[in-house]
Every structure is written in structure tokens, then in C-alpha cells.
Length: 334
Image (cartoon, rainbow, N blue to C red; front, side):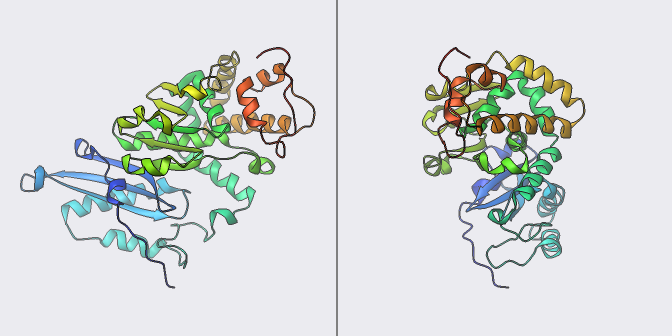
């Protein structure tokens, strides 16, 4: 069928990121005009080439982020072939023909996915995809090892819909994978799916995206461009290596709690069962939080603490009485 024409202007800044010439191979996850993309960059040293090397990237655009990383192997092969034999796109064209699904509303349909739009997914389907994506990246275990008890500060930031930005040196693939993994912290049961406002998954962003980011109220993204560290008006939580840096406005919400250490020990024990078991830990945790906040009874500071929250986090979540009718008792402290 007919497909709409997509303006690809600016796509080159997404698929070949700043500083790519410093690495031999890398990959990037990104969003472009409402589509999700993955691209693999490859560099081939060649004295006769401009700047002494051929540099090319191969990528795909999809309607959703499901299984983006499944395309990495063929894209790596295609980018290498493009460097060795410029102008030969046979691998990519064959992959496209074998996997794409006709859909009049998009340029490239999701590869190897059912032809449905994200908003058409049932809560069960959406939860299943979220779990599968999370497990595919061996997520929660690696996040827990990296952040330690601070993983719960990250969890609270995402639960409250803050603007979370990961910043890291090259390779881009590492920070994209970490951001991708963090989304698994919001895994929840089907019946509670609509209660969590999932932050927009922006994946890799660069300075070209700054005007756009000014208008996004809740997101999770990553970058390798250090200039973002100074753009404090664009983020609520900056994650730089192992440091979680809150903005001045969100320091209270992102404070450590006295429960973080004990919860982390519990997570470590559960994580011994593998990625699925670790993911189940956060599904259970989110379920407990959402079930309690949807009750009409007032919630005490002691209960807030037991749920792994702090007072400011609870106040933020309880701002929507239609979702969460519970009210916070002001007596005592967390």
C-alpha cells in the first residue's frame, strides 16, 4: 500500500553521534518524528578514505520500541558491508523485504511485530512487551549491580514522572542500554497499568533536541554530550556515571530513605533467580504501592516508609485524587 513520506532531515545526527570517530563500532537507540530507531555505526580504517577511515551507520525505524535490540546483528553486518563495498545495500533491502509489514500510516512498519499501534495495545499486551524488553537486556540485575541502593532513588524518580537523563561517555550503546533497562523498574500488573504515567522514552538526545526537551514534562533519555549537565532547566534527575544528581527543585523527593539499604538486600536476594525474578520484585513493589494509594483510607508516614517512598514522593503521587483517593496523614515523619 501507499506510505507517507517521512522527512529524514536531521536523522544523520541521530545515527552517527558526536565523537563516533573515536570508536570502531557502536549502536544507538533513538526517537525520530514519533518513530523509534536503532542504528549501528562502523568504522573501517583506510588511508585513502577521507580522514583515514570509512564511517557508516545502518539503521531501522519502527513504530514502537519493542525488540529494537533484536535488529542489532543484521545492522552490524550491514554497516560493515557498506564500508567494505560502498553503495551495496543488499543486506538491508533483503532484511526490509523479509520483515516489514505493510501499513499505510508509517514509513517503516515494526519489523517482526504485530501490525498494531501503541495506543491500540491492551494493558496485558503492553505489560507483556515491557517485561520482554526488560528481560531481553538482562536489566534489573545489571542496574542493581551498578547503582546499589540508589536504584530505588531512580525508581522513585520514574514512578513520580520526573525528567530523567542519563549522561555518559562513548560508547553510546552502553548508556542507551542502561536507559532502556531502567524502564523495567515501572513494570506492573495488568490491572494497574493505567495508573502509572510512564515517562516518554526519548532514548538518545543531542543539542538539536534542546528546544523540544523544554516542552516535555516527563521523560527518560540518554546522551553522551556533556553540555546537558549544565542545562539544569531540562532535567529533574541527571545520572552521570554512578552519581544521581537531582535538580534543586527535586532534591527532597530524591533523597535517600532509611529503607533503601534493606530493600536493596531483598532485591539482591531475589535477583539470584535471574532477570525475570528481579523484574518480578519491582512488579510486586509497584503493585503494593498502587494498591495502597488507590485505597480511600488515609496513609500514614509509617506506611509511606514501608512502601519505599518518602513524604515528597507520596505527596507527588497523591496529587491526582481520581487515581489515588488516599490522603497523607501529616503526623509523624518518614
